[in-house]
Image (cartoon, rainbow, N blue to C red):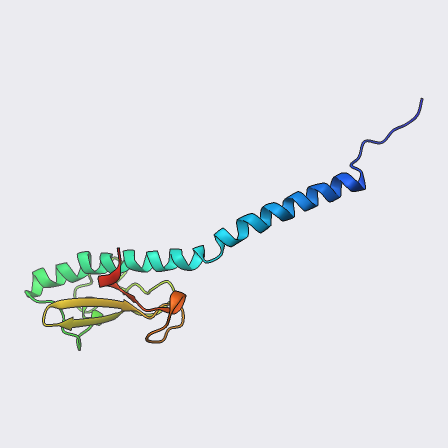
Length: 131
């Protein structure tokens, strides 16, 4: 009786590697950029949460929104409008920019490049432009 070893041949292994390579080539382009897109979506959720939660509570208590000069820091002084007493930061670890133009409130994240302006993934995110 001949002792046969059960194993994959070199050709079978090469076929599996080629198939896996083809699958990866088809899937990777659709995954590229999804991380940045998710960060941008999270920033919109955070800004809406700050506006609908902390800023509205501030307005109820003080009858007006904080001025641009007072900024979001006014939400962390005296009465904390956040559970941990800290202002949330955007997905890139930066503070949100707050403006109050005669009651028209805008929250802005400078996004990935952390500079004003930018295009594509580096474009600033404005609460008024969030879906």
